[in-house]
Image (cartoon, rainbow, N blue to C red):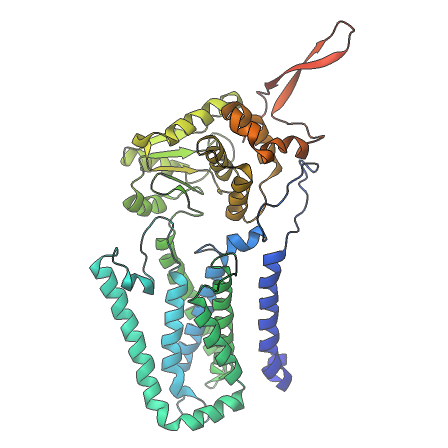
Length: 461
């Protein structure tokens, strides 16, 4: 706070922070650096997307960038509440503009807490639902009335201070907030458009929105609402409590838009993957997707069983769903994989939810096998999709697994896919830990491998 009180701090520090945040956003787009895996350091894992996988992951609705926007907008809302509650409406502080600032902050908080589009087809509660003919009348009416109320507050407050506009313009120059306010408006406007040629889609609009909210927060901080009143501890405590409450409310609202963590549509309306679902998440999503089958790719008999597993089983029984769990016996993994692939092609089983614990390894790897064996997609496109979903390259174990499982299930496709043929080269010098060699001796006494059998002592992914 000492630097903030100096002239250089008041003028230059916000711009320095904005520049650093913007630079960090650019760095995430071009950062391909990843440490080698300790388990399989020799496995070559190339990138398959034109930009860093992190950027594609951050561009997803409800992910990190949207959550940062929620934090920033909630903080601005808390600042406005404290400023209005302090009742310091005089000519030495631009307090007459706080109602407009509060309405804008509330709108930004609502916008950040309602990331769209939803992966399950739900129209959501964002402002775009007002124009969505698929949404219910009451949803469109409620969101529309809320939007109108905020607009009325903003316009009414601006009309009230309009006669003294020159005073407020001069005051904005004294506080050094004019440039920050212009930047905030410009970046928030850019959130509403997708600039052509900028990839990944939705990454830069979300970055711009966060930069706009950060600029707006600096504008509010320069009005010194935390220093209003006889003491500083009380307003700061009020801001903290208000901010915490708004963040909790925003996270709960965001949960309605994404009740299942890392939900991804493999085939919309038919097959979905996600992280380990909670009972509440399943309850919300079941009303929208009407799952008939749930497949758990994680062995819940292990010591790493999920605490949500019992709730999942209870949900399956209550809704009379078909459930398929991963076997604990490694020798059964091939049979289990084939059974899941058959179910995925059975219309009576749709829609299907396939999940593991984090939807980072097993579920995306299964999706890739389905894409290759059933849909016949090229392996390069499959790895690119997994990269975007994970936010990093697939683990080396996926390369080992694909070399082991794909040739027997799609031999013609595997033989003609150049990236499938390149798997062997990427694994040069690396032994598959899930196979054990069967040695025999030739007539000369030389030991050779005549067959590779599954190792029953190793649990498979």
